[in-house]
Amino acid sequence: MDSVRKFDPVAEHNRTRAALSAVVKRLVRLLRGVPDLEAGSGVPVWTVGDVGTHLAAVYLAYGSASGGESMEWDGVLPPGDGPLKERVAVVNAASIDLFGRGERARLGDVLTERAESFLRLTDGLAPDTPVAAPWLGPQLTLPLAAATGMVLGESLVHGLDIARGAGLPWPIGPDEARLVIGQSMPVMMPLALDTAKARGVGIAFDLAVKGGPRLAVVIDNGTATVTRDAPPRLYDCRITATPAAFLLVSFRRTPIWKAIARGGLRAGGRRPWLAGRLGELIATP
Picture 1: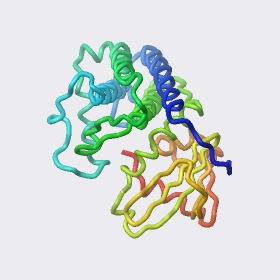
Picture 2: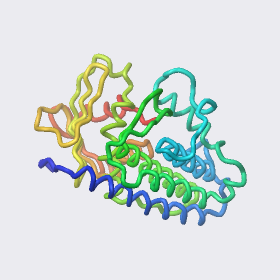
Picture 3: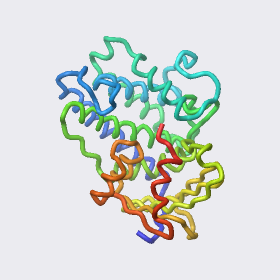
């Protein structure tokens, strides 16, 4: 765990694309095994069908941003440039109404079509290709690698939401979780920083995920930087985590106390009690 592992951005991006393709197939099988799309899900305010429709909207949005079917954002995005958490909440609420009843009735096919469209449109593009993400902020772009990691993360986490509502299994493999963490979190964690809470705060976290990646998360007076494969430095707190445990705690699907009790998370370093601050300062949209 102490060694810093270098990674190949192109190879890891390709593995993320392959993982996304496989997870979507598994997700569609899961949805087709759900007897009632109006049953509750792991998201308290959404049904299983709502979660699936939201995922279809995610695939549509990222596909549109990658040169596919255009979207009319004026009726979806909130006005102005508010906090990320509030902005995403508005877009999420609108997402479940983007598709009509007919498309909702064949949700598995719609998910397949939208996910395949995103993968087809981005095939062969470099991992650092900019992808517009207006739902995260005006004029904001993400590297394609981070966008693909986010789509994979949404698929894994919302697959769990569907499975919990239907009482069906939904395992999240460590390799899948590592790809989400390594590809998306260096970009998304700084965007999700609660700048008000982080004002005047200075904490350096060493986030060591079992089997990789390893991230240096530095909060400095209202800003955050997340560096992969960072050179050695002095940290305040070290968080050691299994990949799936950290993914689910980050997305607020598993309480941190439960992850600790199960051995998925452990805090150490000079000031281990600061571990809980990471989730307070970087809010999941």
